[in-house]
Each structure stands twice: as structure tokens, then as C-alpha cells.
Picture 1: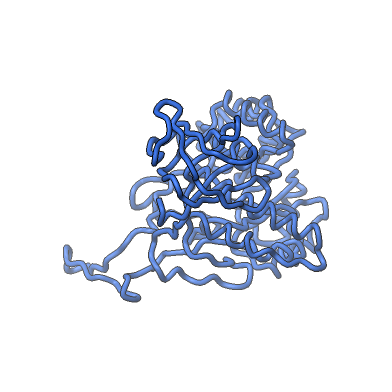
Picture 2: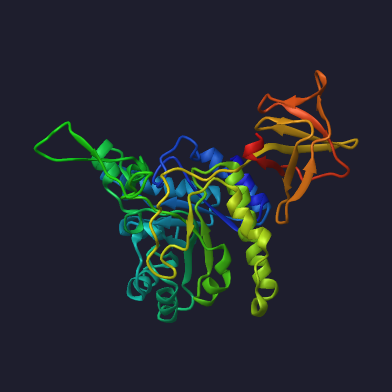
Length: 393
């Protein structure tokens, strides 16, 4: 729920989320029916739409449960259902005829023929396969009904398989990526073994740091909003599931401001540098533009993440010249930090004093989730995040 709230506060027009069944992220944090209703209520209060994922391929037993699941989702007030399986799509149209159907990227929509047929089957929107270039998207847009909305992923991890339909995890550790359980074996380290010499492992080197046979860079299209719009893209999608609250807030804020700058002056669009830098201040692999401008490059560094900034506190209140914050990571008196303002540019803040309500003034805040007071000359929005460069944490 915290990540959902961050997306809403920092500028999302819509969020997509998973319930306990039928979604592509099998995680205990997924929404139970009562939580889903609460989430929809929170979003609708802020004018934000909620799209529920039903994009796995269900078993026969799960198919029996699908109609009741959809009825519950409809009662919760979701604004659309995202599906990939034809049977699920048809069931959505039967059970929830008044709720828009969105086609998941898992369906692998690569051309205008498929997109048009899905429209005639009742789809209001298609989330295109990630392997399409901008030229291909533009051609698809020109050859599909204008009422059909087109959505593409613009930021986040990229799968080394076509549209995420990978069997490596299932084969190697019996965790099915197509049912939300991917173990990400594409990020593991590997050795070479000759079949007649079992137990003799030979390192595989592409450079001094090892081999990156299956590694993919992260996708980032923050500097190309105008090109996406000109290609006919209706909706920009950010991968936010299984990401931190801070990641969701920072990336949502970056794209919110990028879109707003474009809408303010489409003919003279020039992205502010601070917006680009926002995407560099979260945990990420090296960025690329994916397939949008041709075939993407391989990631020749390592399987890990670049992570130089992190959240240290969240603003909860403001009283008598003090911010009341909830600590997330340790910080010290005298530290220089930044406040991430929702839908705006971050501002610097110096931690002049740290007041523990129980112990008085202290030199360091070192108890995560504990409340502290920090002097500041004006209120900040509840939920605003304060961050620092990780080297200082």
C-alpha cells in the first residue's frame, strides 16, 4: 500500500496492481479483496485509475474460480482488467461487460493485425510487446482503429526473452516466470562444463569482470517523450511492482514532470536536466532505450545495480517550525539531503538539528521507523521523502 500511495502522490494518472491470484507477480504483498477495495478508494479520491492484472495463463482449476474473482474485482471498483489469455479476455467481457479490457504485454502484440482483432474482441487498450521500435509502433497506430488505446513500457527492467515469456526459471528451479515466480536466472553467474568432464568448471570471460551471456540493461525513455507521443502512444507504463517505495516515487515524479513539460510546449520540448538526473538517483542497471531505436545493447558491467541515493526519512507532519519525520535509514546532524517534492523539483535541506521526542536532541537518527523532529522554515507535504547520497549513509 505504501508503494501505491507513493505512485499516487508523485503524479501517476493510473496504477496497475495485482491481487492474490491471476497476476504476474506472485508475492505476499499483493492485494487481498479488502485491501483492493481500500486501494481503489485511495486512488479514486485523487482522481487516479486502478488497473487490475489478470495476465497469467490460468489452469483449469483456476479458470473455475475466475468469474467469482472478477465479480469481486468489479465490486471493488477497478477501472480496467489487464489480461493476456484469450479465455480470460472473453470471461472478462462476459462477467464485467462495462469495465474496459486491456491486453497485457504478455500477449506479445507485435503487429496491427493482432491489435485490430483484439479490438474487435472487446479490447480498449493494448500494451504492446517490448520488442517493437518507434517506427513499428507508428505503423501499427496508423493501421488500427483510432479508438484503440496504445500503451508501452518506458522504464524498468527488460527480460531477455520475447515479451517476458521465459522458461529458464521454470526449468532450473521450478519457479514459473509465466505465473509470477521468476527467480531471474538471467542475472546469475555461469561457468562452462564439457559434458564428458563433469565437475570441471571453466570460467567464461567476456572481459575482466566475467561473462554477461543473458544480461539486459534497464529501459529508460525519459528523454524521448515527444517521440513516443509522435509514434501514437497513448499511455506510458513504468515497471513499479517489486520496487521500493522510494523507487516508485522518484521515477513516477520524473516521468510526471517530463510529460508535463512536453504538454506545456510540444513544439519546443526540451527536457530539464534535473528530470533526467532523477532517474539516475534510484537503484538501476545501466540504462538503454530498449528496442525503440533498434536492437538494444547488452549490459557489459555486471548483474548488479547502480545505487547511489536512498531515502532517509518520510515527512509525516509539521508543527511549530519542525518537520516530524519517520526515519528509514540512518542520518546525522549536519547532513546535506534533498526533499523530493511531489510533482516538482527536489530542494536541498540541511539537517541542522535532530530531536528525539523521548530523549531530546541527538547527533544521529539510527532507529528505522522512529519519529524525529527536524527544524524547517515551512511545512512540507505529508509523505514527502527526504533522501541522501548513499556514500554518506
